[in-house]
Structure formats: C-alpha cells, structure tokens
Amino acid sequence: MMLTLATLLLTAVQDGGGVFALRVKRAETIAQGPLEHALILVEGGKIVEIGEDLPVERGIPVYEFTDWVATPGLVNCHTRIGSERGIVARAFEPQATPELEIDPKSDVWEELLELGVTTLGYYPEGSGIPGQAFALQPYGKTLAEMLVLEPAYLKVVLQSSASSKNMLREAFQKADEYEEKVKKEREKWEKEQEKKKSKSKSKKDDEKKDEAKEKESEKKDDEKKEGASSPAAEDGDKKADDKPGADVFVPPEPDERVRPFLELRKQTLTAMMSLRKAADYLHLLDVIEKEEDVEWFVQFPLQDDIDFFEVAAKMGEKKLLAVTQPELTLQPNSLRERNIPAELARAGVKVAFVPRQDTVSGHEDWLPDVGRLVGQGLPRDAALAGLTLEPARALGLEERLGSLEKEKDANIVLWSGDPLEPSSRVQAVLLAGKFVVGSPNERARSREDK
Image 1 (cartoon, rainbow, N blue to C red):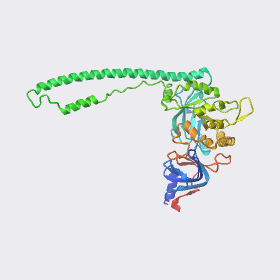
Image 2: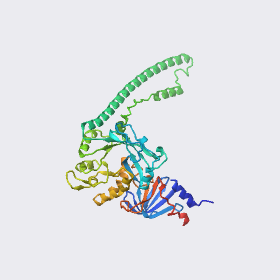
Image 3: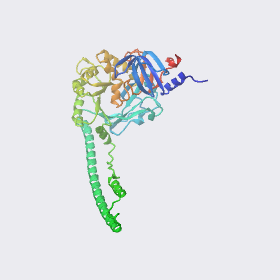
Image 4: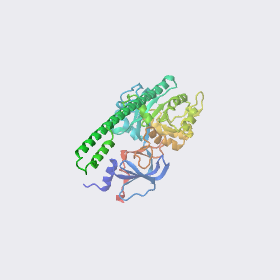
C-alpha cells in the first residue's frame, strides 16, 4: 500500500524533520508579545517564521490548532528532580557535576514533558561551592541524548559570614596566583625564544658569509656569474627567515578547582549566587564587584521572613536576574503580605521562577502559582518570561530557547487555553520540532488535501 504525500510529511513532523506549520489561536512569543491567529513555520527542528495570518506555500502541511495557545517550552533552571542516587553534600568542589545522579530511565521525565517542561537546569547539592550545573531535556534514552549544555552555571552558596566570603575570595585569589604563574612562564618562554632567534640569526649570518666567500672563489673566473646572487636562493632565505617558529607557548595546566574561576573571568561560565537574606547580597557585593568581568545572577528561596525588597532597587540598577519561587510572603515581624517577585520586576530585576516544591506535584502547581502572582500585581509579560526566557538566560541558553522567534529551537507547548489559568491543560509538546506529547494526527490538514 503506497503512502500518501500527507502521510510522509506527517511522519517527518513526528520524527522532527521536514517543513510544517502550526496555526494557533494565540502565540505567546515572549519576545514580541502575544500574536493572535498566529502561524509558526518549523523546519529542521527550528522556527523559521512566525507571525499573524501568514500565508503558507502550497504543499507545506498546516496543522490547525485554532482553539489552542502556543508558548515556548517551560524551563526550570534550578532543580534536582529525578535524582536516584541520594544527596551528595559537597562543600568546595567547583569542578564537580551531578551527572551520576541522573537516571535517564526515570518515569519523572515523561511526567514533566506532559506538564510542558522541556528544559531543566540540574544543580549539584551542597554548601559553599558544590560544583557546576548542566542543562538537560527530559527526553532521551541516555544522559548524552538528554544533555543540552554542560556546564550551565557554577553554583555558589553564599552566607553573610566571614568564612563564606573568604571561600569565594580565596578561590579568586587562587585564580590570580595561576594567572601570575602563567605570566611569568610566558615571559621566561619569550626570553628563551629571543635567545634562540639571536643565536639562529648569528649562525645564519656566519653561514651566509662563508657561502659568499665560497661562491666568490668558485666563480671568480666567470665574469657574468661573479657577484651574482641567485633569486631562488634569496627567496629561500627570505622564506626561512619569515617562517614562524615551531615552538608555541603552552601555559601550565591549572588545578581543576581553579579552572572554573578562570572560566568565570573569561565569561565562558556564569555563577548562580544562592542567598537567603538581603544582607547576603550586600556581602556578595564586597567580593564580586572586584571581579568586573564575571557574569553572575542570584537565587533565593521565598519565605515569610525574607527581606529582599530592601535591596530591590540596588538589584534593579544592575538589571540582575533573580531565580525564586512564585510565592506571596509576609513582611518580617508583621502580617503585611508582600509580592516580592512583583516588587523586583517593577525595580528592573529579571525574575525567573522555579516551582515552590521540587516535585512533580510542584510542577503541576507551578503555572497556577505564577498566575496568582499576576492577580496580585506581577505584570503578565514578566510572569510568562519568568517561566521561559529568563530561566533560559540563567542556563546560558537564551539564544536557543525561551521564546518563539525565528532561528530558535522549536520547543513549543500547546495549551487548551491561557497557560496561566488553572483550567488550562497541555495538549501537545514539541521538542526540536518533534511531537513528544500528543500528536497532530487528529487535527492535521495538509494543503495537499485541499
């Protein structure tokens, strides 16, 4: 039995290949705001076009979901869900990663996908500086298939104590010592190279003089050749002089615990600074503001005695990213309720949300909890960005994930209604253009059928 073109195209969609379009009631793009009657064109796992009422070339299958809402895949940038090997309490192991704690066969990954979660930032447990997080997708047979980015950020747990500050300060001092060592080794190497060049030049000069005398002696009877120089020989000498030295300076290998702090300074790694009080933030500034090249953001749990509203303006001036839970809290020593995420957002802080509980049920409540903050004053655009783009930024993946834009990964969640409404449910999930939850079968309409 021959397969129809529409069937072949549908198979390509399910396998994450080919070209297809999704037409939805509304697309919450995050970057451009909501688009009504939106069409999303996908090819090779990427979004290649998105807009309102866009035309589609004949032959491209269009899947009609005109009563559903599309959002980017949800991103939880700070989780340990799915750990099957217990907690490994680390104090100062900045080189460590928690890869061995992940079980790719766990049922939790499928449960998270069904809730619209497409990216996770898995962090190492511990105090002090316990290691580096990595980003994964909850889909794949092996950890290698699940990995999206490694490392994602360095986890630093900072407290308002001298010992905690000194740990971070001393780590950067070790990086200073290494860089000074490299500088001295380079200077030593350069001096040795200069000596080699000087000796080589002197030797070449002597050889040229001997060669000139020999040629003069051999060719003194031939007036035409006497004193003539060979262009080929001159060319060869020139090439030999211009040839770069084979020796290349190789810096000494840094200690594995120093390397992460060198990468922070090179901005190939960012740091998540985990805090508990506003005072911790001020102590952090004492250490980190001297490191002008280091990119960092903060993470803190929301609790009733939290006082980050006191430093919201300072954090807003820096346009900091703050990772926290969607929680309403009480002002310390009072019964006054505060929406600290809303206060931070109004101050200019970029807020990324993680579930209140790091469990499957916590992820089920995640969006409704954020929705309640919207009802209490959090701007809607900040709420949606806090579930998608801002946590992607925390993982260093904002160029690929977190919004529905051209050239980004086609990680798309289709909802039955407004994603922030408690009654809305996930209908389908695409991961890199592949349907991993739900199927376009029931609603698919190829233009070939028209």
